[in-house]
Length: 112
Image (tube, rainbow, N blue to C red; front, top):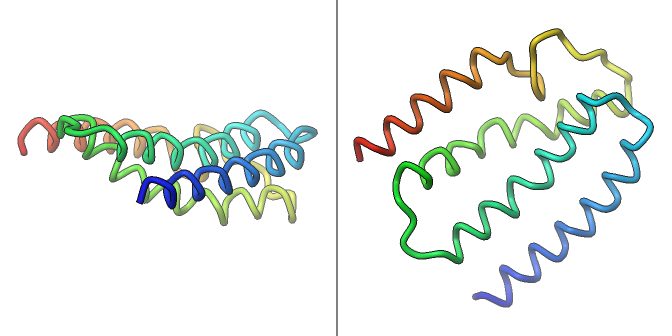
C-alpha cells in the first residue's frame, strides 16, 4: 500500500512541475491556485501515513477536498480562457467561505 501511495505522490509531483512551468507567467492568484491544487494532496498523503491524527487536523484536511475539487476547473479557466479573478476570492471561493469553512471544520474536529 505504501508503494502505491508513493507512486501516486511521485506522479503528482510530476504534474506539479508541469503546472509550475505552465503558470510561471500568470498572476499571483493563478500561481497560488496551482500551488493549492498541487500541495493539498501531498499534505493529505503525509497525514495518511501518520497515525493516529487528531480530529482537529484530520477533519479540516478531509474537508479540504471540496475546494481542491473546485480548484481544477477554476485554474483551467484561468489558464485557458484568461478568466479574471474576482476580488477577495481564492480559487473561485470568497474569503468569507474559506474562513467560516475552516472554523467550522476545526470545531467539528474538536467535537468529534
